[in-house]
Amino acid sequence: MDYYFSDFTEDNYKRLLTIFTDKFQFYHYDKWDKIDKGVIWRHDIDYSVHRAAKLSKIEKQIGVSSTWFVLLHSPFYNVWEKEIRDLLLYIINNGGEIGLHFDLAFYDLKNTELDRLEQLIEEEKNFLQRLLGQDIKAFSFHNPDVNGGFMDIDRITVAGLINVYCHKIRDLYQYCSDSNGYWRFKRLQSVIENAGGGERLHILTHPTWWQAEEMPPRERILRCVNGRAKNMMCGYDDEMKKNNRINVGK
Image (cartoon, rainbow, N blue to C red):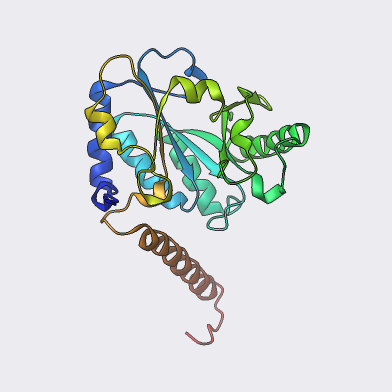
């Protein structure tokens, strides 16, 4: 199987976006039922807000706007950290919209507990809105196909948010995803090449996969983990120096 590692670079991301802008207009989810031809582009931020900020900068340069879905229970970043919050605000200032990436496994929910689901999505939506000062309009499930059949929930909205996995959106739009660091269905390059008239495209990318240089997916994750660890230790050392403390062991 060809995993197309060379696809997942910042330079190629910029190239693909440039091609897309020649063929399609970019929309957000509040226009999903009003599009005859266009693309809704979303990012699930599973691992790295720093990577998301990098891609956001590229999108601003190209002049497009996408939706960035924030995972409140990610073990790889913490929205309570000032740096992470500031990066999310940077994405908003670049023209991006923020969505909620809802982790079903955190709550051990069943797909029959719809009232409980709605309550929890409402709580997380309100938190994100207060944190970032931007209205949240849409949500995506995190790993919906492995966490209890939530892909079968056929509600367009839950807690006032558009369910990006509802059947109507899935039926109307051609879907392309880079989940797990490779193209799970169709290669994005092929989608562009075969695009004709009247398409509605729904593109999902994960910022961590798109690095400055090509590498296997596990190495991309390792780079994010090591970068976060290094940043944390630099923060510790700076704090010790600023407070005039002895940094034992350094």
